[in-house]
Length: 250
Image 1 (cartoon, rainbow, N blue to C red):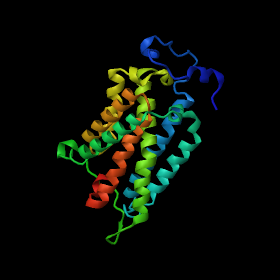
Image 2 (cartoon, one colour):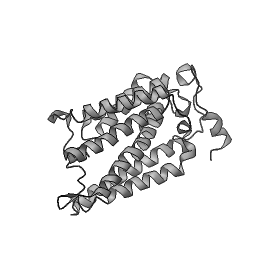
Image 3 (cartoon, rainbow, N blue to C red):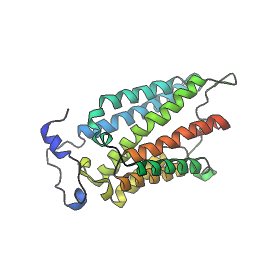
Image 4 (cartoon, rainbow, N blue to C red):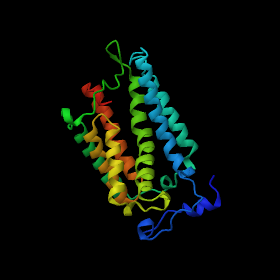
């Protein structure tokens, strides 16, 4: 629950309002990061923490095959946090138009095509063997199912809440819940897109994806649009990876 003062400050801005249209500065005693901000940061931070744990365990001698179980736990932990904070995600309680849905799906497919083709050496940030669900050459279909489900159903919600709903608007104004997505400025748009790109091994493809999802968010003013596009990209990528054996894309 949020208290009455935060509830009043958190009402979403309507058209023509928000920081870009003269919204008041945050009160002097307002915390640097509100509960609404932490509700978007903690699931993402938990996801990153599991990546760090996996890297440490691998450095300690565990094989990548032995660490495959970590991904379902990672996705499950993030899903649990999303459920705990669900009431804080006011933007997820509003749905967009059917036309927005169709556009988001098309954008997700375009991002997928670019993702698997922007693979020149200079477009890569290091290298990764990816997530290989095979055991003695045989595909473990349970692991495949869990991987695709996590990537398509959990990750898009978690990442869009952090990168678009929180960071993009927070760079624009500390009281980010007042910011109308359509009024996000250039700096607030570019910084999360670049950081989103360098979160991935395919940094250029990541930046392209960040731009695509960010534009959807700003134009449709609805977080479900980039979530759906992101889900389509990740879900179809999983199918493509299994079909081609391109595990490095996972």
